[in-house]
Length: 305
Picture 1: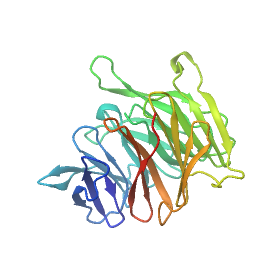
Picture 2: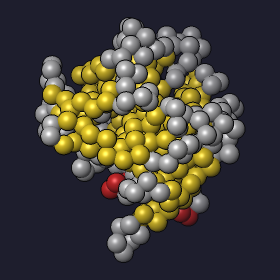
Picture 3: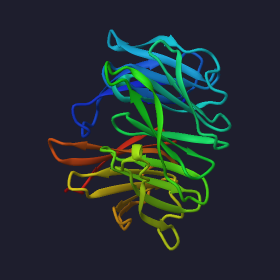
Picture 4: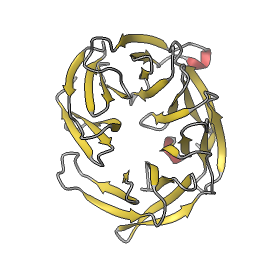
């Protein structure tokens, strides 16, 4: 799903990430400019953040179009929403705003706040969730971001709350971005001190075991001066691939943070987001990137087990 400053919402239907002209459903906001969007896991429910009321508008598919189906209360956040994500099994909708609003909110399907998590880190930037929605983390003005776990009731699977699972401690400055791999074993952080760090996060955090820093690098004498977005994907063998971006460039690194490849002009303008997707049947790893140029690019990567 994608939103654009022209007030449109598009839900793409793709049998393969290599389709040249994928079909999409189109929806449109009447007055508001979208700031973020999230897609449910099961029933194609779309949540869109809007700027003038700092709240969420819901869309659903009907008659081959996207139709507005609901709206949360006005001023759900103090500042514009930067990230919207669905929690595990669609049991909650998570919203994160930028700037001085440091409270992450979790919502029911009916648009009611059912839980809150305050980072208390002066300013929030952007939230990242794991692929299955079980965990999330927030990049903030201060270092030492936490990874938070969504807690479900073991009896009926209903939303129970959240629990701070672990802290990625040791950053000297704020964090631009956090990436969590698809199987919840590794994370990567990009810091304002122009460094990149990978972490082992498959630890017994309920027994107070702390995450372990794996690799650390600074961007001195590197093709990148710093990393803004960062993502990590791990194969079953444990081998990991990391993607970083700065301005309109993308860098691909291995688990030892050695450069594998650089895409110097991946977009015409600054990159906003990158995300890995893996075709298990074809055994092909893809990287999707979107930027201020209004394009979504899909990169077929040569890396395998």
